[in-house]
Length: 375
Image 1 (cartoon, helix red, strand yellow):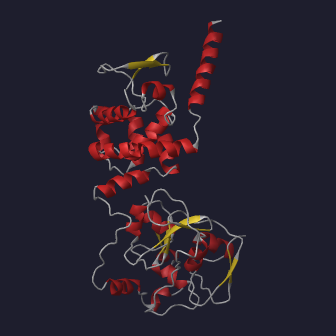
Image 2: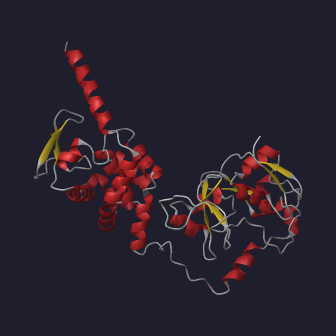
Image 3: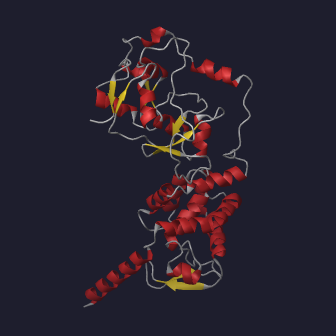
């Protein structure tokens, strides 16, 4: 009989916990909008990523809808512990009627969360991490024993990445002058245009010889993805460029593509083949764009199949997420185009274009060739 009672209680507890977690995307966005300024303030004062604070608040309080949140204003699941002298509320959690801290208002919960992390030795190692390293913070919190849920770190990371909450970290850094504001132009260097052109000049023709090994045309990024080198980009041009020419790049204007919603950057974002991109200015670099869109420079190079140290030109399309794998379309090659240019034009991964057309980095295309972007 005792086993039956325990089983029924377990089922009821599971139902209660499941119901508590039933919140919508609209609830998540509403929660972020409501508490982002408090999270930014705590990041500024205590060096705790605002994205981590918000993700924990969302997860621990079910977007502020849990009993602990509605009756105790406790958004972070902090229990009483021996040093708590304030009000309390008892809630069934890992055990029956556990003691949790109760606050007068939600902001008090945010304050106590910051103090809780900064004053306990087990969380000390977290503060050696960058405030932009939300993944490291999430895993560190789990390792330090903040929660018993074995998927706790993954849940926080998933929330941050799905809802682009790391953008809030960027806002905090921009306000503190640690990152340039998205609408602030960087003062160009003198003769900057000349430097860009000089850096974009192709090497001598003998570097495009077909007997070069495959490895000479590619490098690996930090995720072990293949990124074409400058040699490979130029080698498959329709009619090889001269030694002093600049490889053709795919450009666009604000009117060419529909705009897209992208909450982790303040600059205009557009969409091509359902893939988001930004349009570079004459002052942009892959590094500066990466900082604005919460990506690494190497990730952007990988997304755009750009070679290391690539320079950008005004109007150039820069994808901020991985390009697509196929498109039901065939492209007729025009003079001067490269396979990378075609890849950028249709937002299709270069390796997939190689695959669909039985081509490689060494392949030479010519005007009039038909390039498939699907099987």
